[in-house]
Image (cartoon, rainbow, N blue to C red; front, side, top):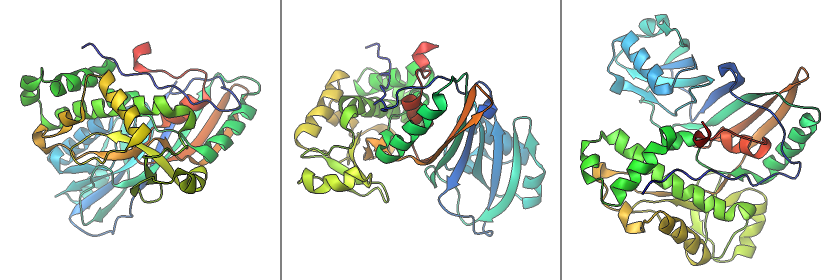
Length: 352
């Protein structure tokens, strides 16, 4: 099976789309990590607040480890930031001195702050990210369109698509993940490092999830009988037996229907939501059982909201042909999902 990731489809805002290009320069895409907790200032792990430019998080981690003569496995991060950006994030390193950490730097990254904490940073140890994105080549009237659309987005959220970086270069991770799950890639799986294997399976999970969003995108906040809903404030997941009763909270963006991230312990919806998810699986030639008993003790599966809340949204003009839009997203959510609702065109890996 030669499978490319499905291109996400915008839900569409009432104001229509505006013009503009993003990531013309790394400085046009600024990301600030919002940590889950403040470092305690004591403990065995040195925490470094690092600013990086035009480099992946993992390449930056490798350079930091080399500069500190540390094992890269001793370095922890809470999240991966865009390579084509200016990003600021915490990383942790065990077994090094504060003074050494303050003295290091690279061509594409620098240390802004050094402190300590009792535990290593783990993936997901963040509340979210704050984005400031410059759109170049905008036209007259785009400021008003952006203001209207951002106000709508803050009220109803946006489709919680996985971005193209989830699928690997030109979708290669999705293809390999399907080969593994469909039985033809067992030998390939045995040769893979655990991290690479995980990326391939995650690409398949993400493709299924994106297809479920597409099937429901015009009513992502509408609860169906049999849905499993997620509370945005604490990610609690619960079944919807009386949709009309819970719809008030869904309309207030307190909760949203969820979609599948398949694994052996993922709860299943019932009724129409289950039929939609079954169709997304079948389109890839898959069944739920194929996500059980995966090598490496791979993740148990979970539910993910079909839409995501967008907070602190704003837009400012820059000269006559550029705008800067800013917003905050929860962890695990992609800025491209917001840009897809704003712009006439967003770049997808299949276009390049």
